[in-house]
Image 1 (cartoon, rainbow, N blue to C red):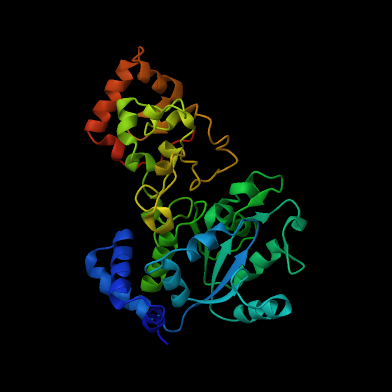
Image 2 (image 1 turned 180 degrees about the vertical axis):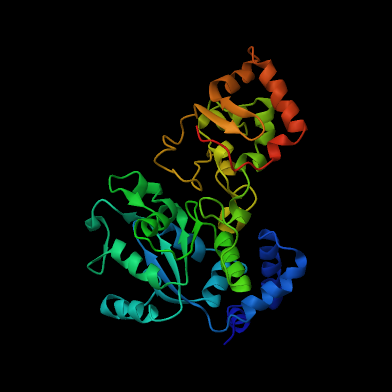
Length: 359
């Protein structure tokens, strides 16, 4: 059964499949003329590249995010394009049978997916099958064609593992410590978005190589733009309307900067590609951006609901949250408001600047 037959068996029409491939091509920033090549690459992935999917210190939220999508789901496409040979959450086998499946998969030309962080302080913090997870990742990494680290835990040892005293590290750091050169694609966020996973796999199948990456090994196409530039509350920021009281209904849609929003220093496409089949994302739900796509989340970004003391905006420079907040009262910083408005009018706020500094 080929990829399309497998999708058809699940009730996914060819029309829906082509629509998804066209949308994925656009999301990758590729010209429309490439769409047939992308579709062909996916349809002809008949040999189903084998995948070994490892779980370390995490909550399995990335797997849940991938498996819970619909119409047609990125999960269906991913799972039907690939042959998942080992995945502790969804595989039927367990115990010795599962370990046999893992060892057999290592003999093939496989892609390794890692979900979860690796403890570097003591191996006992994460043991799988009586073996340190660290050793399993190193073993599989040496034999894999490429590695996709999904979620903030696997990319940077972040999330809850990063907040614990286990010295959690991501896959790239572990490989660097052990001089392993297998290419790593980082797909951070908590959890990873299915569209990001699908787009990365589609690119790999189409071109046989990893997509262009930034200095954090993230695909530029998904992590190349500042969230602040596309925030639905951007107009409130420029108008100086900052939420100060959660219980005041008149401030419901105000900018969340003073409530700890990390959008001004977070590179992600969250404002364009939402979670749960494009149902919603954090800021639309009233929660400040926690910066989960950035190195340093969550440890250096917490407390998440405390305002940032300072940050730098592309084209503007260093901004102090308190000074910015005073704009609300029209206090003595009108010059800054004018500067912000003028900068926004010239479009400089919209420029991508990967050289931005952290606070």
